[in-house]
Length: 503
Ligand code: SF4
Ligand code: SF4
Image (tube, rainbow, N blue to C red):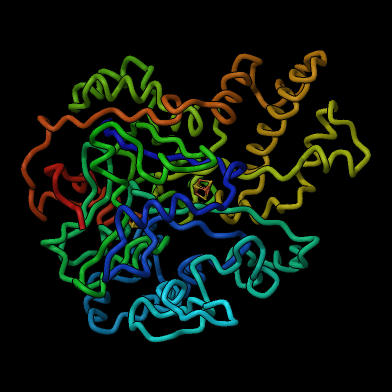
């Protein structure tokens, strides 16, 4: 067992109101400059919808992430190293500016400088790239608030397998929720494995994936290899840039800027400990529906004395082990098991997980003539929710509807229990028993999901700069699964100086 630490995130999708504050504050902090006008390190997309960039989840088209080769070893979907090198100058897996949406600004000056007249002055849109007037026909969240869903919703790659027939896109009958996305700071990052220059790396101390700007040669293999399309090419410098997980703030023990400013208070940050020796095997399990459990099994219990001793032996500081015990991310993923990874079938082992949205379940019980106090009626309603289980399963469990239903039933039981408690009704243990929660656990989970304070949502220990070492060089790095070589004990995240990596 080799214990490593990772700062990870969980988002509770039931609380996202789609205000885009996270995206705007991220942009102001990191990409408010020329070269990356079009880039949103954090974006919020409406689901169902085609996402940003357009249909990024269609890996047949973009060739992102990992697949198993004939020997059952993870290999980059974009092909062998030779194949990738042969497409250095003509890479078909790169989204165009039309896929991202041309960034626009507006003639704001007209609003204050137009001469007095009968008409109200208008700030016309202009391309932020060319300065020329443009018609705005696409955006990073074109379906926002269902505005474009009837027209574009069916293009959502998660609606494959006949699901598009089941989902209604008429305004009165459809469903929607918001999906905030950023780089997943994966345990098995395809972007890192695809880089021919060794410019991308995963930090040993906190798992943050960064781009070394001095090493980047602008080949953009990382852009196509990332299945979440969360690496961007800066067209002014020619180099790759990506979400930095706000590493200067994390090192100071502060949450990322998207988490700090989130209006819905739905983001959680914390440390998880994992067994680096098992990363390769977890990424290589044959059945895609087993990837969720394989990834959950990677996480180690920091309360286990053996794990704590191994963590100390592997150089993890005592305050980080303590933070892992208090981590809200660990609690939501491993203890209560209500958080799920986005697209585990990409095999990158993402480190931003989501509590799936629960449609109004008690309405569904009432509509079916059931009783909100009867566990059978309540759990049966989960399968009839407006958001089809299959759709959530395609997003979070590689198609395993039982795994999604299990999480939704737990959330439903919690909601019913807390409702009864708030109304002063007698406690019904049946619902909680059915999902394996004690009343004390239900109280704790409710506190965490509904009313957690700042210090409970963000448990981020400060960095140990004294432990940071000099750059180990490209030879010192590989991601836990080496490209084309299958699971290997050789490839490990590298420890770097903590002042590197800023774009
Ligand atoms: S999501 Fe994963 S593969 Fe994509 S840029 Fe981030 S670490 Fe790399
Ligand atoms: S700030 Fe929070 S609530 Fe608003 S869109 Fe972002 S994640 Fe959702």
